Image: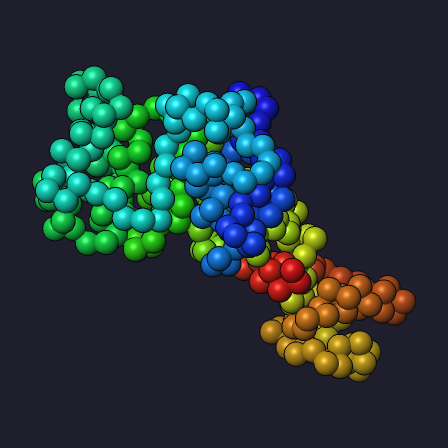
Length: 312
């Protein structure tokens, strides 16, 4: 499906004299995973509450599936799934019965509920505790149930607000893999997390919110290119031992950590590694020193996030 699943224009949420969300605008295309990031108190949860029709905006326009979140909330909810941060589970029901009940509430047939329950128990690795009551489960197990049950019904848009809290690395990857599979089938996902590895793995586009304002929006690669900086470079020369040219390199990289992991290789680590690399390439060219290969350590998304938030 082409076009925008979510359209937000000039969104504001005001509490007294304070704007929790201040003039925020963005679009989310169908079939994409949109990462919505920010430090605690940035306005993420407030924005999600508006998008999921839980609260009305103070100002601005929000449309989902081309429908207004205030005037057409019921139509939007029919096609939407929501997993919020707050724990939510049916304490006295087993995992199997909780999933079945959720499907029943969505009007799913008994046969389809049985099939979907089996599929989700396998996909989220819940066979070992499927017959246990939810109040007997660990925090991570309850979280798996909370996320899995949203997939009992068909939907076009899923809101995931820090869905992997309490999960071990294996369970976290299983959850993300399942979400990724559903996205390939056309699902749109609005995703928040504080774990940047999850963002890198899952998200097509990222928006960063701070103090209620949208301060950056781009693909992960685009944000790295715009805000990141190479911290280390490794250069391998061709037929030239680096020891013989170290006296040429040191003036350029005087403040850097210089290492020689091999006779023909030099590694330079510095905040200015990127600019140093340019100077060294020019140096080698002037002195007829041939380069076999160049490797650079790109910035991490966490480094980019901290840079963007720090500048705001």
